Image (cartoon, rainbow, N blue to C red; front, side, top):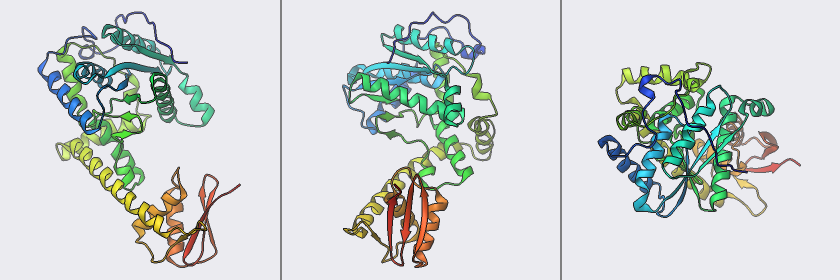
Length: 349
């Protein structure tokens, strides 16, 4: 059940002076905020966000999400957007209830309904054998989806991921080895979730909030070096910016181009796969596709979740060598049986 939070007003706080501001509902009259409102509207047009939509704003209380909240409120009237707010308290640190209070109070001051919930993410991570970051991510998106579904079938979710988040994600994917899908980084739109701030810098958003006197919270865990993203944020990104000013924007542009090319290649692979598939379900490997297309054919034929790169590579190599009688385990109870020029995918019962 989604609940509307009722929290005491935020008093004091542990933020540095630059992060503790006078109001969470300041008027949007400052020039930087006005420019950002226009940028948000332009991004929403590119994402095909329709007028009259029900929109859930994912707000953590940090500067990026508080900027999203105020920018969306300023942009909503001419588009007829119906806004509400969702906040998930992960319960990972003392003071997290103050974040929830700030979000609930800011939403109330702006005339919006706030859906606030507390979840024990540490317990979820232990139960599932996952890291805190992944468990928190899954819990957040499940909550946002639940809130959106409670509002209406067509409700959308807006998150506050920025160009900085995009650059960090691309670098993390590069570090572990990735293809075009990984280089695409954070999707601008996936399902009901949209990310209209991906073209904006974190520093610009914070500066605009400070100028407008809008309050936000700084999560101290963002500086915890145990998390890989924090190490990328503190070390990799500044080093790249020193080597090449504008590296963050360049990485964000790379991600956008990679996403375009990834979609185009997937469309080509899907058409080729349909032409190669026989009535008995087997897939012809003649004529032999290029290795790049072959990998995509394998991933598409295997279905979601995509098999890991080593398994895909093993199957493509076996088919390329015309080695019959090979069985390649693809994970998730799936396997592929390769003959000299055909392959069959099976789900083990």
